Image (cartoon, rainbow, N blue to C red; front, side):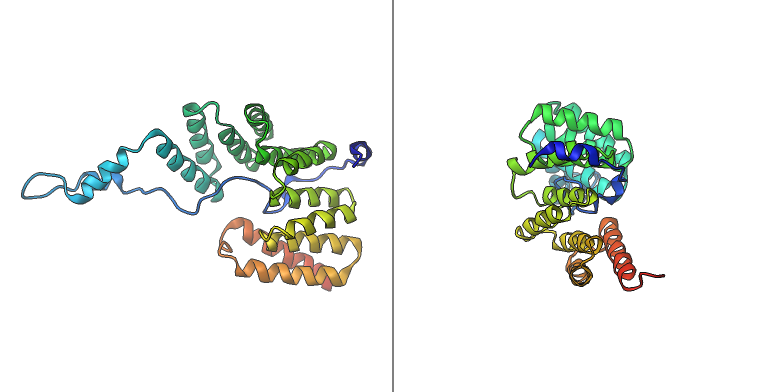
Length: 265
């Protein structure tokens, strides 16, 4: 691939069009326990000694540094997942203070900055993450999303390529690369990226949605309709349909399908 062929084809695109699968972060569906302080207060009325439940609470308080970091990271990810960006940034900042050489914390905080529209802070964190760990494929994927949102498609494509060289199983990078090729109207390359992503067996609802949109824009309406319907079926089968990102994607696919079925409305 000749990267210079992209230089004169830049056009502005909102980062909101990167799709629900765009950001890359290790997620957790469980909130840390909030009952430790209650356990500490449970004492035996007869002996004045902590009950078994209180001992359990005290054992939680004796977590080592790595375990505390894990709980903090899980909490930050849950806050970010629910749109509580300020709280998530505060927690990631605490993690960075505790572990200033951890590239993952910078990449994750950069992602939350990006999602909250603080783009200068986001790119600074992505660059720092890559400086600390040049082999962190998720940081390249996230930085590529930033470049694509700024219309810097050459830089985006190069970062997606690096992410995929480091980790060919990075399904999000394949999806995002396909979206970027589509923005450049390079539909064949976009379809190739989506087909490779499908081989990984993950995020299939997202992939069918984006591939369907690519067929739609290319004029292959039958293929587009099939992919839109597959996307809606897959999205309805997943367990995260209550999350805002999945809801937005489902509504987007429904809008695309309606546009395809009723082009004159």
